[in-house]
Amino acid sequence: DKETALLLPLVKADESASLLQLLLPEYSVVTELNTSPRKALRRFLMVPVLIVLLVVVIPSLIWFRPGLLSLLLILPLVILTRWLGYKNAAIGYNANVVEIRNGSWHSSLYRIKTEAVQTIGTRAHPLLRRAGLAHYELNYHAPVLSSSVWTSFLEDKHLNKLRTLLENSD
Image (cartoon, rainbow, N blue to C red; front, side, top):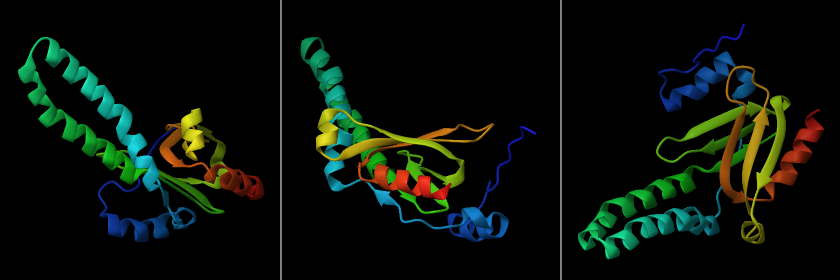
């Protein structure tokens, strides 16, 4: 009771599917992951790059001009991190499972049975809605583990499909 176990601690990625099929066949279902559209890339990059520019450029121009050289290190690192976040953002679903992938340097894939999903929702400001994008958050029933997962800047069309899928799975 209230114990957790690490199911696949040291298994290569290509071997994990066969092991999952053997141990938990209800989770071995493959879904088509819908990734972020190309138009979402600038939204992944814009705010973090602007923040870095403001934090580094303004103080450097006022107090210490050689501080601008730090942009050569910081800016590519921020851009690479956000690009990895863009590449790893995805959602997939079918009648049995909902999969959400997120992260930047360390990508995480969550595979949740549809019957365990409690709520699914989106967050989007007006400019994001106008672009047809949204952040997805899924809450699921899990007594010990974190019960909420999210992914960012995906097309907003998935919410209606997920709601229909979850209503029909009951």
